[in-house]
Length: 243
Image (tube, rainbow, N blue to C red; front, side, top):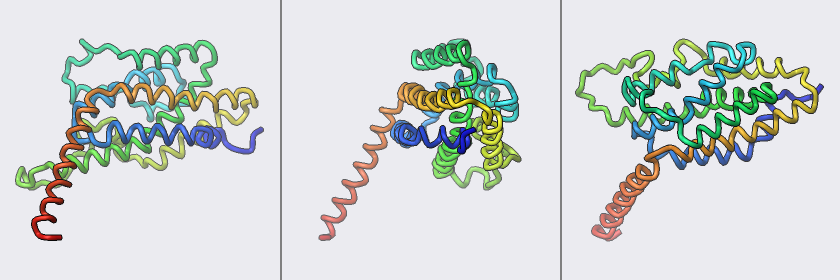
């Protein structure tokens, strides 16, 4: 039996590509947190992936309380309208991702554990950070004279995916890791190694669908334009006053 838990081994093995993935998310989405269409597209690319896992991974590995399909659909309905599924078709990057997941299911379904670990822990970690940044950006745009009521809804509209009412995020993360570690404790070295190697594939596929998010380049250019104007204005001010 291995000395380290399988979740720790997966985390350590993917440290470098995880950093690349984080940088990509920041580059693609950080400047677009105030753009609802980009935010919705970011949700849309992961919708089918989470749905597949929830339909094909048993509750012994992925308990029902972690399922997010309904929350994905609630947020997409909020941003894209009630009829969004009528014209929806997964883009090529998503189709490629799903093809790989179907292949794993047919050849060695236990490797789906890597996707459960990284995707759901990611939603409970980085997903929470992105949601908080987006909420902060939205608050800066709120007119305080609207109603004078600072009380927020338990689950804000359009934020169902990253909301876990009355649940401890830390506890949920620890519980999911414990479930996976306990389930994998008797895996032989060959299966453990395959699971760890598959962990890297998770981030490779994630990066491909993140790169397909639409509208980010335009949004980034707008933000860079605003920053350039601010810098130029500051420069002119300094020159005018002899600094």
